[in-house]
Amino acid sequence: MEPAKSLDETITLLESRGLTMPDRDAMRRILFDVSYYRLSNYFRAFQNDPTSGGPFKPNVDISDILEPYRLDGELRSMILRGTELIEQVTKSRFAYLVAQHGGAYSYACIDSYEPITDPAGIELRTALVPSIRKWIETSNKTTIRHYHKTDAPTPIWAAVEALPFGAVSQMLSLYNDTAVFKELYRSLGVRTKLRAASEIIHAIVHLRNLCSHHSRLRHREMVIVPQVTRDMRRRYPDFEYEQRSVAQALIALLYLVDEINHDDSYSSKIIGFLSAHHRYNEGIHHPLQYWA
Image 1 (tube, rainbow, N blue to C red):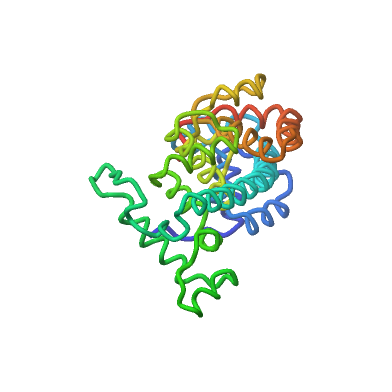
Image 2: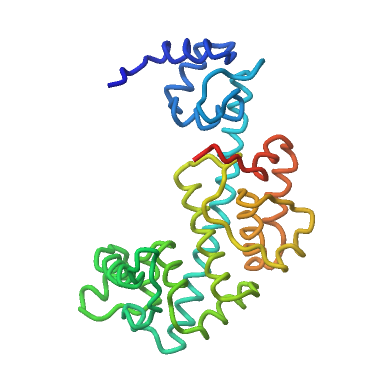
């Protein structure tokens, strides 16, 4: 088993690899508060062999690493404000439209969802529907308690308050009433095929989850990315992105929030933030494949 290293031993190891740390006391506090492994996610862009770690490039100072770490925190906070709005609005509009189309209670029935299978041949709806019921049954939200007490079925407008955004995203990808989707995505300004539209929401959920878990954004290669529609490119013609970059997810986020708000205050804030930090901005637009 690998023995645990003290803070001083970790500092000595980093110094032996060429990392400059002018203030050892400050570095002890950083390692104690942040942890070596969280900070090490930011080391690789500054190392000679990023795939295996090891020595740092010449003249790398700890401040070079702490700067993107700090800026990631600021960007994550801004992203979460946007994803929170998208989650709230998507849940509300989806619930309303489902209810208007006669599905106020059938949302928890397996026949309300397409029999789409995963690579193993398992129907996705067979896991989704029990999951929906479990979230509702175990919810302590005030909006749900009334239905628990009266033993009445929970209507979708109350149910969505108990469901995480990921579960709602799965509902969007499998629900079989296309009229609901057409109205929902039209209200969000998303004009593309229904499958691609649901994948845009799925990508927003993935981005939200990364930020909620304090994951690194700079130079991240995204596992799930949205389709960038023609309307998104027209809205932000100067916002460039590489495939599978965080910027590819951001352009969808900016578009949806601006559509909901009916102004560009949100996108202007994030674009302005990125423009003010050129080196960091490059890392948001450029994914590096050697990172998990």
